[in-house]
Length: 566
Ligand code: TEU
Image: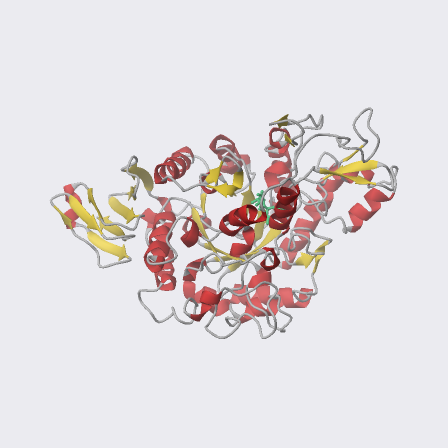
């Protein structure tokens, strides 16, 4: 298996710089703070650090709105700080991957400032400008060029009074979409990427990269109900030229360079059929993608802020389908959490009585699939959702836009808040809990978003030396991937697909077999397993492991174990 790419046995750790570690007491995390905590990552054993955006930004969307791709935002430090951090990451044998946010820029990027300045500015065509809908005055209700709804609520078009035209923004109005049809735009992006690779970075996580090719006809989307906005998704998700654009990027940026890079495309709405194309090595597009199917299964009829309980059978069917689809061609990435998702132990686990057991059981299930696992900061210590009391505690533009629009439409504030508490992105963005001091060791100042009060007992310092801790369990899972080829490369076979409480599967490679069994519920369960497993070795367990006896295995609440047969 020596020809398998290095990232098949690697684990990636995502740092959300704003909330990781603050070195200067301004309440916002920074590059020097990250540098001061690299030993935590070494201890955990991860191979790659992915940094969410640290570029110059007005922070309308916490850095996913970039005003200069080649400058570090002063709130995070300087380019010298960045170079120092990169060197320190490399000294510890890890790689550093940057976030690449090129579907859109900030409206404060000089490119957009020029583009909006006049209809005949040379950069006008770098963004999507359109006149009002035929027969409508600029600014009149319904005058937007298409009926698309923004992913952050409201119309996806904003009128710019100066020239009387609208610009497209799939996200916030401060995030105008770049026009990838224009080859100058693509060349500027490629040059910027080469500049970062020349500095020594090891790859890119590409933000909503399957949105960069829009159907240039810009058709209206389907609406549900009168006066409702339309669904533009079919017209910008995995659009007509996206594969061409990614192949071109690969040629222009990566071809002929020494190095062991990692590219991962974030792709909301991507299907496994498309994912196989995106990650087929022969096509030279990206190494792997972030898909969204498994984190949409608990969305209710009203969307993500109207959650419903997860049916474990749906999760198994979904993740199992992706395992099968990318078994021969392509590669999966594996994640429960990132800066956009609520905390998994609160979402699919039990952050009360079975906190430790459910955090470790969920980790076990995820990490032993075939694919590259991603750990989001705080997940490795079992951080939970935050007890947001009200609107004043929230910071996220998606949540705030959703709140204001829903309340304006007549929904009760308490009802809207309930959805935000369960699903809002701020749950993932509270400061990293290093220790039990007043600000959890995150800052000496006032944190930009409140620290979760449970940091008094839930923190990294309390877990390093406790062999049963969530942290130590993640450490063991990462080591298993590094040391056992069957974890990285073995074939995957789902077991007990119809069981609503137990997640079980087998991995196999060259005569080595692993059995992963997890009880994802708060009651004890007994499951049937093939009798040969009674002779197997327990390689990992989050509780006192049961034994296979006459083909039966007893599992306590949230018990997870891994057996190996050679
Ligand atoms: O997110 C893309 C995305 O579609 C969602 O995950 C998004 O966070 C939202 O919750 C949809 O309901 C990426 C980034 O990860 C996110 O932080 C940015 O806000 C977004 O793109 C725009 O750059």
